[in-house]
Amino acid sequence: MKWAIGIDVGGSQLKAVAVTKEGVVRQRVSRATNPGAAVAAEWIAVAHALIDELRAAQDGAPATIGLCAPGLVAADGRSIAHLPGKLAGLAGIEWCHALARGPVGPILNDAHAAILGEAWIGAACGQKHVVMLTLGTGVGGAVISDGRLLRGAIGRAGHIGHLSLDPEGMVSITGMPGAIETMIGDCTVVARTAGRFAHTTALVAAHLAGDAEATRVWLKSIRALSCAVGSCINLFDPGIVIIGGGMAQAGAALFGPLAAELARIEWRPQGPGVPVVPATLGSWAGAIGAAHHAFFSHESH
Image 1 (cartoon, helix red, strand yellow):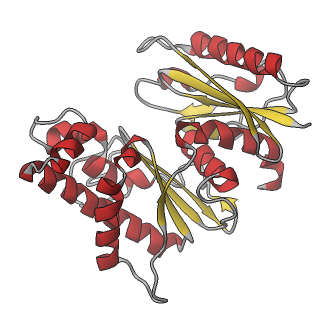
Image 2: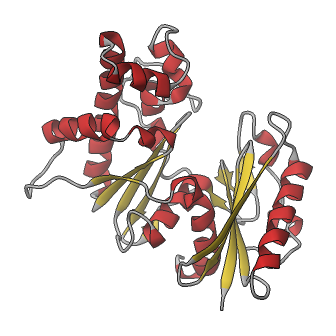
């Protein structure tokens, strides 16, 4: 049985899976890092521990190891080249050398990995044209077109969160004014609610409880999201749009008004709109996609 390890490196936690080449997830493990103090040596040590745990439980050694992380991947696929902010220490780690527990495939951006996981065994299984947005602290994204992951010249492709909807709006971390990330991301909920809510979960709960101002702010965010989704539909012509990330857990409070807004603005020349569905792999999509990439990366070029 051929199997691979997929690892998703995050700021507070690393997740890893053992997956067969047929897409059967045999084991999932995770381990926390020291909040706010994760450095290269700690990330590497935690990755080693997860790999050893998976190897001990499976039959034989993995055929390959895949890894994903936030940021722009270096041209040679061996490290993260650019990652500003609190995870800057991830940039420059040569994972192919650091993970001396087996052959390591090309490193992958975490949003790119997530869409590969969902297209392999998740919500977009069998689909060749996919757009994915992840709604959380920020807004991530990725695109598959004609069965191929869009990477772009330096790995920026799919950063839908930094699509501008308002030239006069708040500036995102990339310097883009009026980005969708600033209109719905958890990173701006305090500013968008004049300090009333610290997190989107509290905003949504107040909306569902009948708070008129919370409802106004939340539905304004959904309108912005619908414009971003509709724009992506016009640009990439996907067969399906996946919404993932922690905010997708809002369920009907998110998908109901989003569907209503899309019914109003989406270009539908053939009648039905593009299905907009929740991700099904949850927080494990990145690790699963990293394993897929390690198995099949030579076939995607």
